Amino acid sequence: MHIAMIPKTTQKVTSSGSSVQSSAFGAHIEYVRIVADADCHIAFGVNPTATTSSIYVPVDDVEYFKVSPGEKVAVIGSVNLYVSDLTE
Image 1 (tube, rainbow, N blue to C red):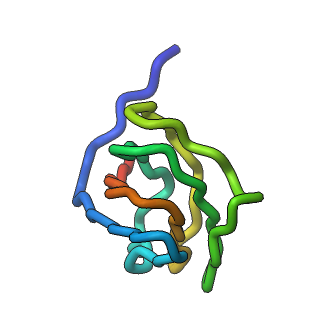
Image 2 (image 1 turned 90 degrees about the vertical axis):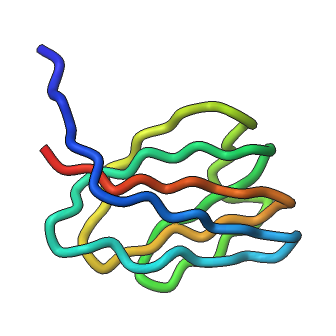
């Protein structure tokens, strides 16, 4: 069974080599779709800091992650990270 998710908003988070956080995910957001225009690393949490030991995301790879309301994603690299909020 495949569950369709509805995209709500997309944030563009730009890092130039240091960790940068997204805005907090809203009250009804359970999943996010992540796409990066360059190789990077990401971390999730209420106040996350991404490092080169964090989750690796290769360029143009589409990833889906379960998140909790109020969390953020942080990214590090020379990259634009596109974070789309999804609901069921």
